[in-house]
Length: 131
Image 1 (cartoon, rainbow, N blue to C red):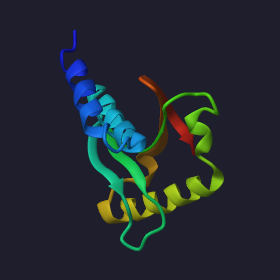
Image 2 (cartoon, rainbow, N blue to C red; image 1 turned 90 degrees about the vertical axis):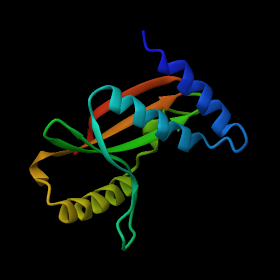
Image 3 (cartoon, one colour; image 1 turned 180 degrees about the vertical axis):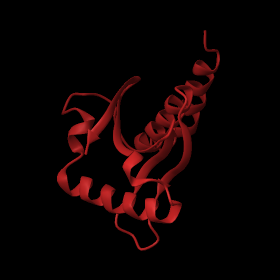
């Protein structure tokens, strides 16, 4: 039984009550979810210095460097959150990932792009969401 879960939810409600920043709350939730599954998060909201995209979370999953796009919705009334990852967004993510790889010296052959969709408290993780 995880005793920290209710504490995290309470802290999130208090933290985001005033501004209702759904995306930020989702990224915090995704960060905790990834860490609880053994991912080692190395960066959040990483942007290349020259601009051109943002990577929500960069993490190591064993020997794989994973670039995670987080999409959050309060409900699935309109569409699934992962549907917002369009070709323009994918191009921007790839551009930012190339820059991150160049700067970090990580092996480009051991990378992948995952998506984490959050609707309310439900989390769906899509490994290799796009190549």
